[in-house]
Length: 631
Image (cartoon, rainbow, N blue to C red; front, top):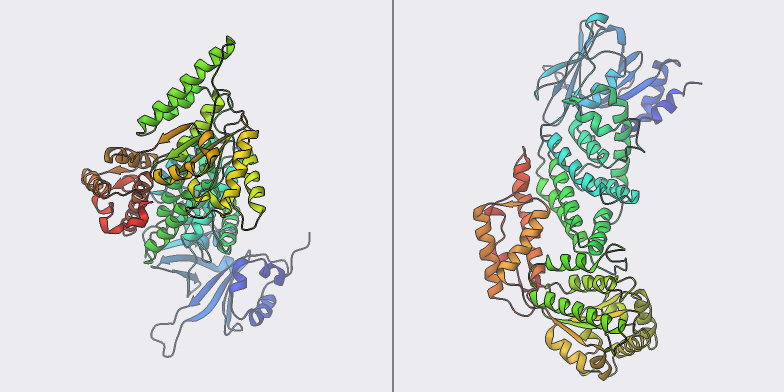
């Protein structure tokens, strides 16, 4: 196959497109490189000013490496170039500076210096591909390390270059891998793992990995975290993560595989970064899964992403003063996804879930003892009614419609979802899924359109539960001509026509719900069960907080526990009907996560213990909250 032209070879180099003065440089390189010569890569940077020489200054330029030569060329004066035959080069060393790398090339009696912002790994990889063995690994920052020498005798030739891996990365990758294994045990949908990989690109972009050369550890960390989600059967003939983890440093035989992965990673991060809005689809997926199965996997994925971000921004061992800002951006995106809500019409629970299994989940909820007793009483009623029906005895009418009333954040939506599963397990509904809505989802802005919009929502809830939050807004006080009345009439008609086809649960504040039910005689006759949701007690709110913390493996110090208890007790004592209960606790938890991130951003060497510890400093102050945050 014919060799590409010099111009085509240059165009295929990623860094070539960022070289200034390409029009001047290209003809020079075409005259210097023979047709049978293969370009390996290009190193961009500058030639430093020569000390002691008047008017000497830094000059931008490049080092072009082929399979036969090394060319040193200044961008402004490309005709003043140096061509070094590969077999004449004695050695090449690297000196790691704080934010750059100085390359020293010795050939004959001459020494040449060049400064680049490429990583040491990238530079070593380029020269290694030129066919010269590498004597040894780099060590401490600022040390001079020989990375290319004349060929050694075959019997004493040393191993190829090895990439060192931060001590922190291995345990963190193991921890992330163990969490992903938990997901793999329950989720077989390959689309979920594609979402996960895209989300890792998104987090990486927020951590500042776009538009720059990644460090050795950054590349490795992202590669290993992505590889943890690979399907072994569909991946290469080996498992990349398992192969890397066998060694104390990066094995050379995976270098080509790493380069392929690096290009995919850079492309993925750049694509995400160019998007107008960022999402974390795997968290959205798990939120719906949790709603369906009453699990907490979305919290665990949020924790995984946050730990990944904390480690990634420190993987290169440097600080740029933007760590807190980057972590805040990641945290805000995670919390935006965690707080997302909407209609979730998926089937609830397992297909063959028994009433005992549903009740086990209900009884595991914090507090709500009166609600649990109401549900047990309903189950007893259905059991006796079924027995009477079997014996052909008269039975009383059965209504599945209910009113939930009480303050916000007390578990009304959670119980509505579980009640749908109770109905399904008892054989009262064929699906038992939950469709959540409110006035905005039912009422349109034009005459006649509200009935259509409401009917569409009812049909989504067919064989399941239609949960109407703040239902009283459908019948505003002193507003007889409001379009909400049309929605109520449509729902009442469907409740009559579909007596055994679905259940309606109307929820809201106590006083407003009482007015709502009394606003229409049809409503009062069709809702036969009323569930009162009271405020959680302080000790119950702390139990709810502990569930959030346990899901992400947070451990509070004794001082932090005391301060948290004081904070929750204080706001409980000040509560009004808008106090957010579990929602308020979630706000406290989110604030603690952010405070911990700000504290850890100042620490370079993180450990698992530090990532999981919550100190007194992380607990927010009373002044950090206001009335609006209670809801």
